[in-house]
Amino acid sequence: MKKEDIGSRNWRVPDPKCIFILVHGLGTHSGRWEAMAGFFLKKNISSYAVDLPELNRIHSYYSEILRIREIAAGDNPGKKIFLVGESLGGLASFLFAAEHPGLFAGLVCISPAFASRKALKFSDAIKMLAPVIYNPAKKVDLHFDSSMCTRDTDYRKKLDSDPREYRSVRARLIMDILIAQARTKEAIKKMNAPVLFLVSGEDRIVDPAASEKVFEGLSAKDKTFRIFSDMYHALSIDLGKEAVFEELFNWTEKQLQIKRP
Image (cartoon, rainbow, N blue to C red; front, side, top):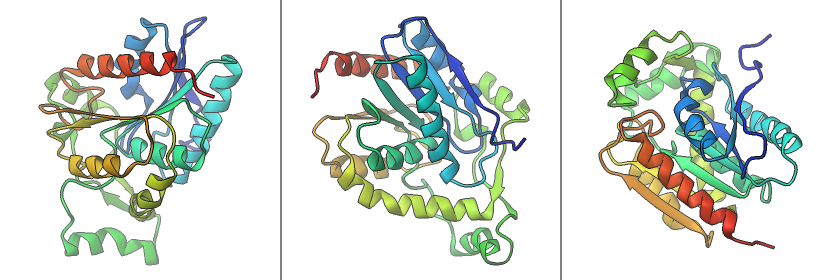
């Protein structure tokens, strides 16, 4: 069994208000959603999480989002389904929702990876991308660590001791990510689902200004942008995450009250 093909994780109530499909970021796994999914269980919302603990190609996100959605829809006929992605999962979710209108009642992007916070030096870029030509399976190091994800020192220790957390990927995935980021310009024109952006003001991994630019370019009529000025990249596990969850809950409640054709 491939490491990518390990199924999914879910947190369910018998008769939920709605469903979240949760899509984690690069270097991690679905366990990151534990706190958020637990919060929404108490709000009578079920969550189903994509689980790709060792991402090799970005298209793995797309096939898993569709597969998990089919499972969730089968378990919960007639319930609205919202797509929620964080970091690279936010970028992948954005592209997927733009290409598949009507599949989701709304899209939530948490610290989406539309662009890196720090531009790579030319020498570093060559070092990372050159293997795509001669050895695309070669591993290259990712330029982030737990201290850039959260201010919660206890959770940092948890991340650092978790064998499922990883900080290197195959070179071809880096190329995939750059191509996906370039596709954002076209996806902006296609997005028609209600959109909520939850963005870190102190993000040290992705560029919050890129999220704001994408948001401003959206033609979707129903769009909301919220920035958490003091928080780090991984809003779902950072100190103060409850405020993020409340923002998402309030937005979801409004979406559930809106009658759409």
